[in-house]
Image (cartoon, rainbow, N blue to C red; front, side, top):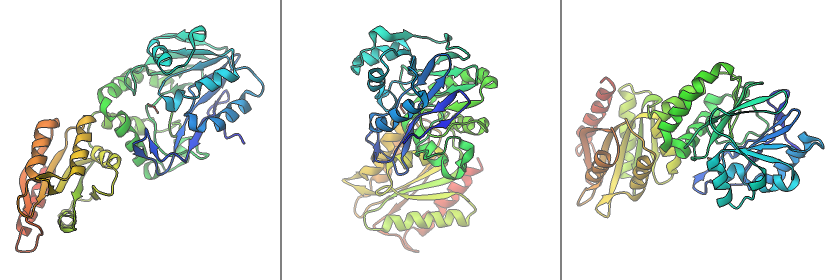
Length: 404
Ligand code: FEO
């Protein structure tokens, strides 16, 4: 059965929702699914904007067929060639053999690498080119590294629809929702939007900034932002662009503390939670505690982008930091995360080393991180007489750092 929604009178969402995939890019857990968005323009010519992942191709073809209602497909615009959006291209060509493919030179090169035979049907476009399909004219804007080098975004000038590729996308299956203003986005979708952007495109903050800058003069014409994942925006552009602006500048969204602990037998956990209590007692309103062993690193990365402060509490393991803390820090490095304030707690029964190793990593491997000089060392466990004073001092030091 078809599942489609109108964006405008002439443009229809024909994408599909994914609920079965456990891991996006085979690495990031999908607990609430994901949508692969594709849009079909019905004009004198018919134009499809991107396709979907192969896994949802059957539903997608049904949607496209329903909206075309017997018409030929004339054009397929590929804004982003990553297979979660382009894998169904072969199937589209098979069913609509007259279709022409419009995309960038780099996308064309990648198409051959992926085995798509489009030589006789390819129309190359570049920054600033326009194309007319009848009533509708579109303009192409290159968006390299958002999130692959071939990426572009396309503005339908006639209806004011910005097909924004991966930009402004979000995890979460749509399941009937089309517009962000149909849901409580801030409450129900924001965390997954952040987790999507920070983990998938987080490394390319400067390129996202570049795209935001290029899109700024176009914004007066834009009435809809239509990404390749998640809901379409037709209101509150300042809200979602503001979030993307902060994330891509590596600026925290909130003044608050993320406490990430690695605990083997519960003693480090106890100290981490005790610190959280003290911070709240001292007036810090937003404190989140996460166990590194049962929280996937994609959430830890996302929350690191959100919070201004991070406390790392780690047991010593093989005379170093706990492997999962190391893995988290490696991800921060890969994603270029910067401008956060860190505090460190270490635990060790005979040779506590985790603190030094964490500090070394923060100082040498990451950019523009502030590491508070107060550090707490736990020898196996903490009590009122062993370490509680130092923990209080650390809490004070964190509170004080908010005032600077
Ligand atoms: Fe959703 Fe970069 O692909």
